[in-house]
Image (cartoon, helix red, strand yellow):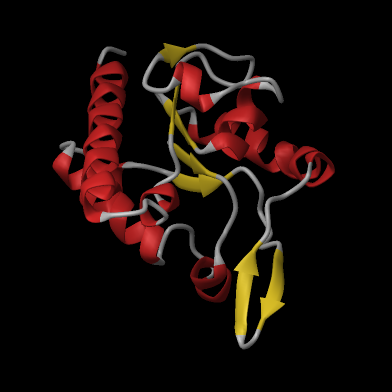
Length: 160
């Protein structure tokens, strides 16, 4: 089960998670990591698209703790129904929803941990962070690290 942060503009319009630019990166990384997306449940920790207008565009805004808490029962229900072998929390909002507000992806990235919500959780960056890298070299380096995290997730999920 992959848990992102919140829908983006493309996802909000389509009504499906990870169909925009970050979703394309995620799809490619899943393939490179040997994970079949059709075998993965994909969702977001926050269920609504929080945004502010900028010209004709709707620009993503980080959800606050109240919005995260309000959406948590939906994520808990998804976890009960899906019963995933492993949860991959992508980005700070997803990871903090699962582990609490003091959790830092930068410190715990790529490690298989346990939480009250799921027995096996691996935190990594959100694929949209790769889009914000300053240059091609940084984008490739961070993409490669993301694929390494997804490979670790695949191995951990296959262990039980």
